[in-house]
Length: 67
Image (tube, rainbow, N blue to C red; front, side):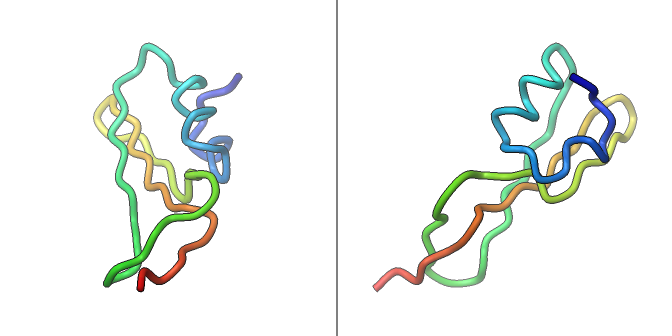
């Protein structure tokens, strides 16, 4: 599997980690402001390589407002 940043977009976080095995990874998870629960799979929304490290910005497929 390729480790090009563009190839990782919309992959699940698990698939992206597998594709990047052995490489340093930094994962950020974005979420709406407030009390929300992530629903579905965590997916890569943006990937970029910088100084030998792959930075993955991830988000869930949807969010539900917590009561």
